[in-house]
Amino acid sequence: MEALNTAQGARDFIYSLHSTERSCLLRELHRFESIAIAQGLRYPKPLVPLEKPAEEVESPETSSEFEKLEVAPPSPGQLRHVFFHNALPFVGFGFLDNAIMIAAGTQIELSIGVVLGISTMAAAALGNLVSDLAGLGLAGYVEALASRLGLSIPDLTPKQADMWQTRLSAHLGKAIGVTIGCILGMFPLLFFGEEEEKLEEK
Image (cartoon, rainbow, N blue to C red):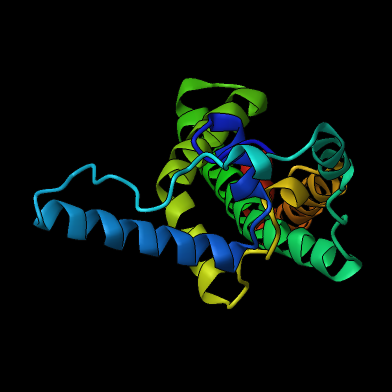
């Protein structure tokens, strides 16, 4: 492991910490900087030398052994946590996107479509435009609502978060979440049957 006064050494040290340890370290660093600024010592000299003495420098064998250490992959419980943490917001996104698109597209077809004579696909495209614009404004509310449901951020180290198992769980959660949301968002179709029949009669 390299010394902490190098970018690689600092990065390895940070990645080896637990999330709670990183949070504690960050708070102490901010506190230290605040005290240093208040005392007019923006860059105080370190009390302990950052570089190890010659006799304490790690041998190549020790460094290679450290590099061979692998971080344990996320447990099944952590992967489930990642899955649900990503799936829940996308249920809301899929629900709102499909519901608004169907409602807006149907109303456009029954109103503007009748006057201008636009096709059903054109009305659906305009409904999708309305849905996308609404999604820009509602995305923050959906994320806030999902966070209020008590689903905390998965407790993973940076290396665990970058593993393929974690990324796969996150992508599956998003895909299944938006699929469920889109299916639930089809409920406006239950209320537009009569209006479509009247349109066909006209």
